[in-house]
Image (cartoon, rainbow, N blue to C red; front, side, top):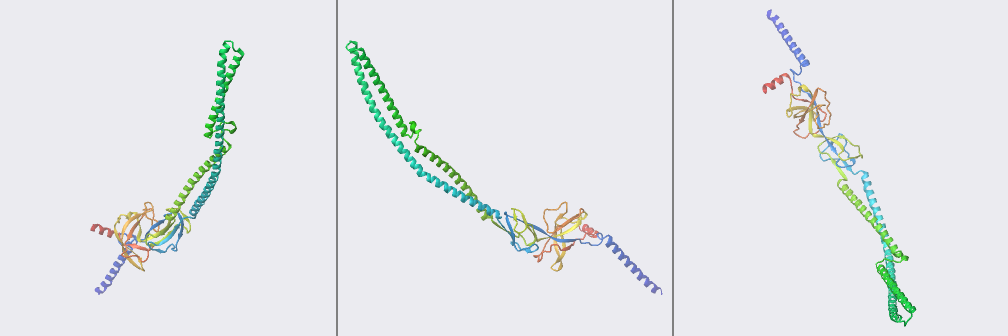
Length: 407
């Protein structure tokens, strides 16, 4: 009888113990999950972005790849060509060069047209000079003849004066005769001096005429042909100066054309290729837009560099250090898979690192984001950006005690 009563009592005690354990577990799971039970933080898969920039200035034309498409390393994503205004600049330089060429040809024609005119005027000047020199030579010959005649007449009258003077002193000749002879001798000497002056003047005029300078007032120091030749020479000198300026300007324009053509050959077109295997994540410029050099064009999510991000409380950021190895778990190819990962960074709104990720991770003021580089043993068939998973790293009180005992 007593054995029958003790059996239900032991069963009730076991039920009460089981119920107590269940309530204790439920209480620990609800209120103390980080102390007793293993808690695996939830995170998401992310990837580093690679920004493509324009190597030259130009007009961009994107290919058939659209945002979200998979791309391969070396695949052409866009093409940059010189903007249309570059073609206008080259066309303007070439038109300016043609215009300068026409002006240079016109000046050369004007200079060539002045040549025969200047030669004709020079010939007329030489003919006039020869005529003047010949005329003065004839006048000099006449003056020399008159000078010789004046010298002979002066000698004759001087001899007569010398014969009359003794006779007048002896009263064989009258005083009037002596005065007349003396006057005639003085006149002859004056005539002789005048002829010498005339001869000297004519010789000076001939010497000047041989040098192209005419002393007669009627010539104004130069004949009309000589004046016209000087005007033509001055006009030709002016045209030659303008021609030299235009040739120098044309040379400068031609150097600019050559430099522009070399620039177009070297940098007239650039092909933008994907530097990594990944996903075209963002297109930063519209098609057919004109952009400047180094302008960002697009961003590619690098699928070869997959990261796993976990938002954690700052108070727990000392449980892991940079370089620590962990295990992450997320879906891949339709099933959950585990991968080795290594902690490579910490991010927060206050102290974010410089790398740019495909998915922006917002964190609270008291949170920090752990970043783990996932190690794939083989190339990923798909780029799992945005998929959620778990960090296989428990930080319960039991785990902490175990790690301390192991340390």
